[in-house]
Length: 343
Image (cartoon, rainbow, N blue to C red; front, top):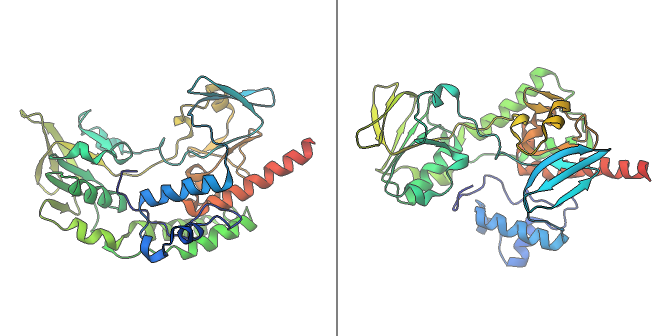
């Protein structure tokens, strides 16, 4: 997430299952009100997270996991600082970072080195005095557009296949009801008919994709931002000046220095670089997602997956922080149950 970004979540999307160390409790300590901090800036959210960590006294070890492999009845975890540890349980909660998706038909058109996904395009200062084309027309595309312009990009073009979404506040209250229900009835979503599941997926998609947050409106409409609705990239060629000439389906040709693809994310479990090949070979997956029980446990005992990777069995809501409390609750219930059985 780039510096200066705003979150679409509200102050009720806090982290504490016990509802004690909430964002509103943090606001009270800071002498701030909800209206003063919404929309929530990335910097403010990280301040809340650090405060939460301190309140709970979480024993965090700042290192990346480089490998997880099965050992006896548990797991051997190797860290990038050279240390390793053995664990009976491992919870994988990696979010979106390993799953950026750019359609193959687009990557086949764009020369290597001239394009990157939004996930890898977070240093906005790198695009100062650059001409940029963003491919995609939903919230992230327009937010990157605003941030690029504000960081001094010469011109930002945005190409997308649909009409321009309307600038209107998204309403997420119903999602809280859904994730609360899943906390009480873990199999609720998976027990729905395929049609009912699709209805919820569409409702979330429509709320998040057919609307752009209104605080983007004034930041987008400037002379050095050009929107190209109902278009798509049909060709690209490197120019003699080492820039890129991009042809759109409308017949327009744009000369840009870089292309950023705001084309979303797609779960592919095998893309997790730290899961050992023999572990992956034993892990049951479907459509790229790990197959999970009602407490987020995979077919490998003690190996849990949550966040974006739980979307197939628990619904697309679990790719957002609104669901972290339910995930924590259900995983903890199973860990406590297992501990009782072991003892």
